[in-house]
Length: 195
Image 1 (spheres, rainbow, N blue to C red):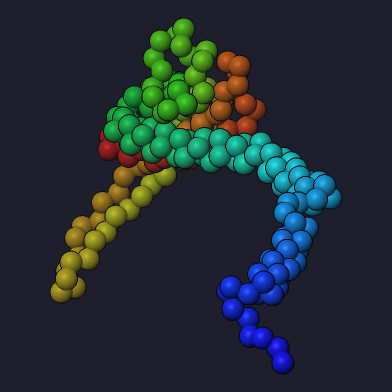
Image 2: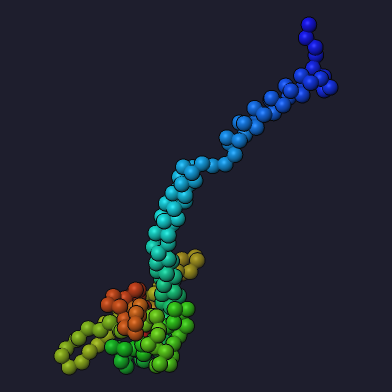
């Protein structure tokens, strides 16, 4: 007849010690990582960081390009608004350069001093589109625009016609104090000539 286990019996303590020892042996083998696991983990991390650092220069270049395009859009908007406020007589006086060239910083600030223009990032050039009517003089290629509005009820207003002077605005990027060969943006703005 076998005796039941009790905390006071020597068989209970021997049996629990054997089970506890077997548990410790299993844990002892699972204590840490072996060298192969560590090397594999380091290789995976190295490949991940290498690919991440390889993509960063391209991402930074794309970020700079998108910031430049956003700044060019802001400059073009500002210059267009100012040019539309320019009297037609001023444009007709000198069609080759209806307004003086302008320079802007990378933040879109107008650079007015000649010493700071060498560090400017953007350069704006204006030119009225001209055609030669004969060899003696140059006339602007004016476009005639007619405006007629219709009021509710079918009544119409008189037709107004005016000549429009097309002026091209080019925004160039500057590197090392010189303009790029092709403009970043070009826009044609029509200035009304009420004369």
